[in-house]
Image (cartoon, rainbow, N blue to C red; front, side, top):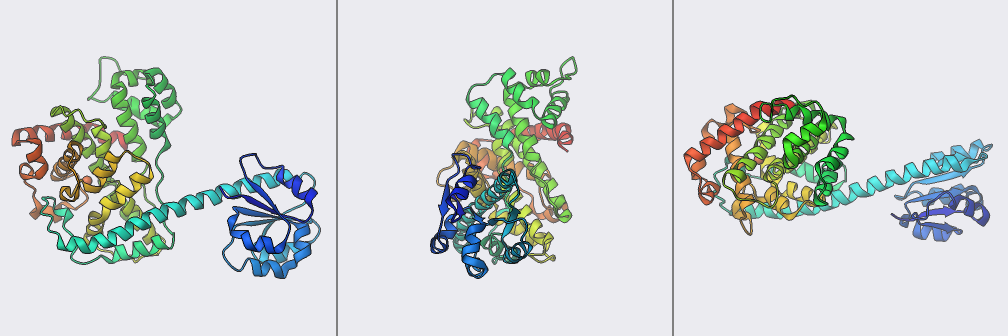
Length: 445
Ligand SMILES: [Fe+2]
């Protein structure tokens, strides 16, 4: 975090103000107008003590604040309305210097600093995505030359660069995009699993979240897991599910909350994407278990997150439309085409930002384009196949009417060949996934 500047020519007052900060927050006292001008943008915020304002005057601040600057907060004499009006007009906020004003100051400073930090974080996010977008623009022209020959019809390169993408890039560059944040609960759970926590300790963690606890209890009572007795508390539910499945469902429950949008027109796609992701998660798990591949990373979570780039793009486009930053008249087919062509790169960038292991990033990047991957690992093959299989079962974004001519011969896909799958095996996988989806989907609504 950048330091806070206290602009004051009264060193005693400056000292008093600096006492509201904790040791972790760097604070610097600035006594001259030239110095403040020179290093203004190196600060997170400026607290302006009124002695400094009285010495340099309104005109100095008018000039100073013409360019982009950090927030400025003045401790103003409580009886001078004109000063308050003057500074507010040029964008300086104030608090009146009443007895005990430090309490108010501390509160406002803390709020301001956390806003500054959020904005910094957002800028970083946008910058990292901007880099990916530049790569994408390059890749877009290379893609035209490449014949990828993939079986998945959604991965065909665009005939021409979509208008929506140009618009997304434009708003990305202006920093107007809010990115989803990773649900913290799943991270805490993973950390505890890594430390070798037992069922009781995991139970203590999960108890803190009512929504998660009650959903886990419902899942444990579903036909899939049901024992003789109905579970009605969390520890029974975790014992029946086991730690591995508990973690999977916690991931699913946490992720479910990400599939939201303020744009009602996009709700249909987000719901379908959620079902597709959940089906793909379970299909990946079934493949891993049936083929006894023993993947190091849980196949369920890999499948659950493989299309996170589609989620990001759908939300971004939905938000942009809602706020009228892009046009309203995007055809569904154009929308899905753009999302399908670019979601790999966006998803990989987002998972990287969330600090997911490299395997997750690779699966997000190449699950629909094996030929582009440097190396083809088993987890990539599994998600590649699971993705195609659940699409063929109808868990997909496109309307049924639009996919008639796009029937996929699952046995004849690259991943099926490499995994050694035959028609009977594929049928069995499909049946398992159907059963799971019929039983479980409703519990995640
Ligand atoms: Fe997918």
